[in-house]
Image (cartoon, rainbow over all chains, first blue to last red; front, side, top):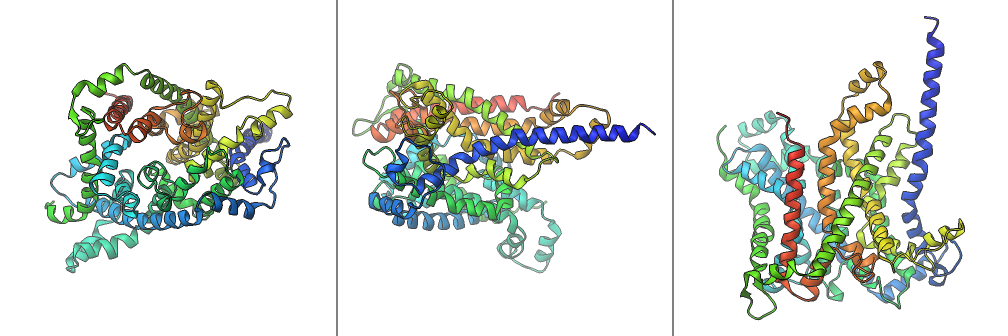
Length: 285
Length: 286
């Protein structure tokens, strides 16, 4: 018994050592990870001749508004943001609806072909998007003549595989008695889905909605191909057209990058739990 | 249980309709397009036209080589880093956990265009902050974008920065599902923390690590935005050209849909091979 206190002290000393080592390793790594975001913010507040000057500048200046005006001169960024917001909101609403309906069917009904539907959805997770890109483009642009429209931006990306699997799992974890009780009362299946199941799935729907919104907001390749006319570009595409031009305001580009990123960071900080839940479920890549 | 075909398919209909139009048909269509000469009007069936060109095209092999090179270096580095991040973020000893989580997870919400712009500016030869910092500790500037090796390094650094936290989130969820008492028993048996990591954590995480690896491989295989924007259309001189960029160039700059479809199906073939390896690695031991 007498050996106990020293043992505990050496144990807690080892713990302290481990704790210090942990923070000594993780702090520089965290600073490196924050560095690009910090520099994005700093660049967005610096005049162009400040960005391209020999000195090391790592603190914000006061030039954000002037940079933003340069950006607006180089491309109609406010208009592009308007398109991006409208598209992302519409897309998120429709996609959450479609995805949760499909997830509900897969979780709660026995039907012919169920195993095959699930297998096919699983199969598409590892299928490169490149395989469908060209026919999608030919179909939407040439056959449907929908290039440079909102429909082109919203409808083709509505298919997602991981979101459906996430919702299927969410609905199948709910107690079945609840739905059966409603059925005994004679409630129709679509009302059970809308008024019993969906309200119960609210946290999962929030996670799904955030991830889908983010995917739409940041989507680049498809909008770049299908909405390439200046007045119909989304904000990332409009910003992308400036990168690589010789006569362009880099302060303006950085102001645009901040405007694209900052709202998402705020949402991330406020709703981190939902974000993490959505990604941890592999909701969408 | 009674079958409810009609009800189930009513709920599935809109989703399956979108799937059929925008995925099932395109998968079949791009396979067929890859066997057609698409630079003539009308397109004509010529089975060897694109595939024959593909196996003799130095540009294709350059893109394939670059893509595989990025894959074999970037993915293992990123997954290892993500495992380290997840394990350390999960440590009960960690203070200010929220700040660390923010630092590593924040890149997940940053769009490809925004971060490509920042990386391009940070690695600028004369005015980039990276070279200025190198100079300030007495190291010479690196001409990041005029030489192939440093340009590839920038691409890999950028992708790793963007996606390590994403994988760490998935791995962290996996770690938190490992029951606490496994570690308690090991600690009572005086198994060191390092051994616990290699003999408990890693084997139990294996399926999730493989899931992350497969998603990352398939994502990196289609890498497009970073070489498009950061290294200026796959520069220098095609040194960072990837399959994704070659497909874009062939399909949407030269409007050669047939050849681009053959490139796309090559990527699909690689993806299927990788998925089979994953299934084989996660099979239940007999």
